[in-house]
Amino acid sequence: MNYVDTHCHLYDTRGVPVDDVIAAARAIGVDTMINVGCDAATTAAAVAIAAAHDGIYATAGLHPHEAKHGVESILHFLDDPNVIAVGECGLDYYYDHSPREVQRDAFAAQIQLAHERDLPLVIHTRDAWADTFDVLRAEGTPTRTIFHCFTGGPDEADACLALGAYLSFSGIVTFKAAPDVQAAAIRCPADRMLAETDSPYLAPNPHRGRTNQPAFVTHVVQFLADLRNEPIDRVREATVANACLAFPALRP
Image (cartoon, rainbow, N blue to C red; front, side):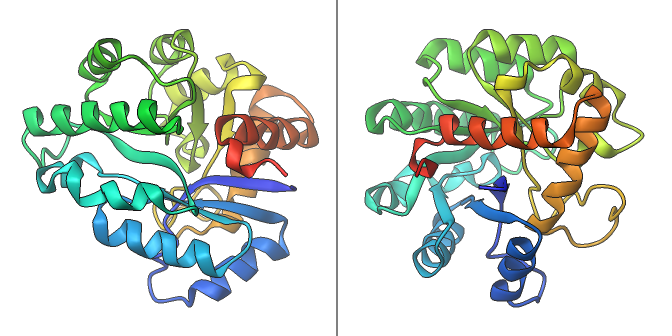
């Protein structure tokens, strides 16, 4: 593998044919993408895209915004061979699209699914660090846990790393207004770092303001290398190796 985008939403390409988005990524060396579900409809779309393309994988999850729909709505997808992780799931107290108690219950239920299925867990947390850690302590952190689109600083990074989790950095790390995220990226051990786009959102510099796409994960990796004063090949190889550890289904 040349690059891995560990978190994208290929069912939302803002009108660009998904085959073109995948082709653009592969042309620049992004040959593996994890297409993340957020509810029943998007999980079904992620599974369909994964089934149609080599090197594309799906997850089954209930985003905190969608927690009110109930975890039962995604359960059957976990039996699909293209599904390689649970999530994205977690807590989002910035928007509160679902009641916080419902979010916590759905998060706890998906942690238990990750345990039961021995699957990686992909976490979304926004303005909810304390409760996120409380739920993980109560339910037990799965062996392979990924904090997607990491937006914390060094303290939150240390807390995540103490749980044995991976930190996945998105285009946010390239933003001038994200010094805490950059400090966390410097602090993150090389064997716990992942790279993602979260496309179509959060395009990294120099594409900020445009629709994001998996091809742009190369800019995230380049920025991480420059930030850490390391050769890009070292960071690229580390993020690929870590992706294969965090998501064992990616291993050849």
